[in-house]
Image (cartoon, rainbow, N blue to C red):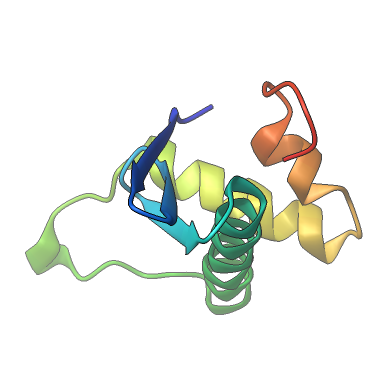
Length: 93
């Protein structure tokens, strides 16, 4: 599971998933919701398109690609993506 990083600046929270995607909000909950929405967009897009990487770009990050594929697959099957992404955190994120 990629690492989650939280940063705060003034009244803004930023929750980043290993630099792959991030969410921003006025609270941690808002940042988590924003991050989850972005992850769902990426995961479902990769799953729907098959995601072919041009050879000029070199091989994709397999860990990253597998994570997004799992997010998209879980969402498509109606699973709990929030628990998958935030399962290791305590609290209501």
